[in-house]
Length: 453
Ligand SMILES: *[C@@H]1O[C@H](CO)[C@@H](O)[C@H](O)[C@H]1NC(C)=O
Ligand SMILES: *[C@@H]1O[C@H](CO)[C@@H](O)[C@H](O)[C@H]1NC(C)=O
Ligand SMILES: *[C@@H]1O[C@H](CO)[C@@H](O)[C@H](O)[C@H]1NC(C)=O
Ligand SMILES: *[C@@H]1O[C@H](CO)[C@@H](O)[C@H](O)[C@H]1NC(C)=O
Image (cartoon, rainbow, N blue to C red; front, side):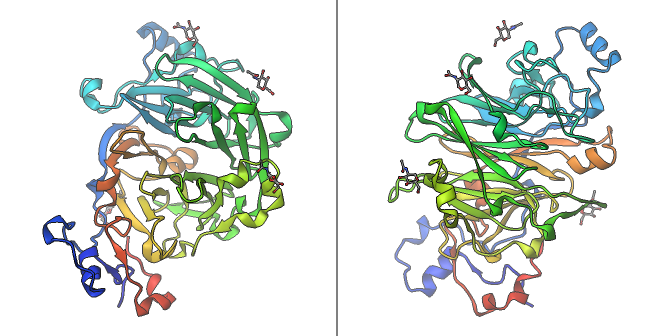
């Protein structure tokens, strides 16, 4: 029987088949059949059973615990970002015992004294983390660093998310200068762009050619299915709706490690293509969380306040759904080469897709970078850093166990994993050196339905 790996040709083989083998053998990538994803292609940087914070003193820490403002088991790292020597981690206030909603740790474990589970340092400092103070930070799900060295913090303003949605403060965007850690900008979302039950959960920042004052920011409303676009230069935002932002009811059922639950989460994952030199435009790839599909829209459309209403057909689904893997995806990101990485939350895996493949977004061209039923249980956030040689960073956190069961404090529950993007994609169908040659079976949908994981 043909598996889903059956019609991939390593670059060398496909070149010889097409008679185009001109390059000396020594400069060719090693010939390797696509292999099952190794668990160790992502390197574990940190792992925590429970997280702890750098309190000003042991007495203050003890007081925080006895007063209930720090409940260790309720703290769940969710979002991450990486810049220079620091990793930034978010901890949404799902529950009440979360002392800081944004924190940092060193990028390199050696700078944390070799500690696998370092304490989190509140960012930028403790005075920003006072529940109930809407001038501080309330509940941060995700953050983004731009090429100008600024940290964009999306503060949802929502607390106690497990039982109800309580909008404690208006959602806001805070911008910090990462060289000074000073707040340089604040924007509160206008009331008419925040719906009853909204949850602003993800953020992508679009800065081109070093034009730092011309940033556009895209933020997702995962529960009310909207995209808010903020234009820094004009200090204003607008809300876009489209039916592609809605969840697919057929993808609302989730199953992992014995837990079954349903989520009707809409627009969630965002990844920006590199700038296309021909069109001068970038593409925004996006997907609802409860979906097996990926969509795209030219950013020129959403950056113009009226164009998305005028041209709803500018939004398009890519290729084919990922039905075969039942792979709902949370976060995604694209590297400079146009390779997208995305978390497969119920598959303990990180997937990839090369957007330059003429074959398009089809199951045969979805690769798996890493799979582990231990280290990658619910990979939640994923970022690609801003280094010359880029790395992909993944935070896994067993979120459904936190929400619907109990995390075992004797097990490692939260992890940060990384790999250079070139090494992460190597030997998969996302490797830019692989050439896709469609085979006869490709037209037989049955052969795609048993992709092994
Ligand atoms: C915390 O940061 C704020 C502004 O970013 C600053 O005004 C304040 O002095 C800082 N507090 C401490 C204790 O460093
Ligand atoms: C940006 O817009 C917000 C809301 O419209 C306003 O409150 C704020 O003062 C503006 N900021 C600047 C720097 O103009
Ligand atoms: C924005 O989109 C509208 C509707 O498509 C169009 O008429 C207008 O020219 C666009 N504006 C810019 C600056 O491109
Ligand atoms: C992980 O997978 C291995 C191999 O399939 C299996 O033996 C093991 O029991 C699994 N562990 C967990 C925690 O699911």
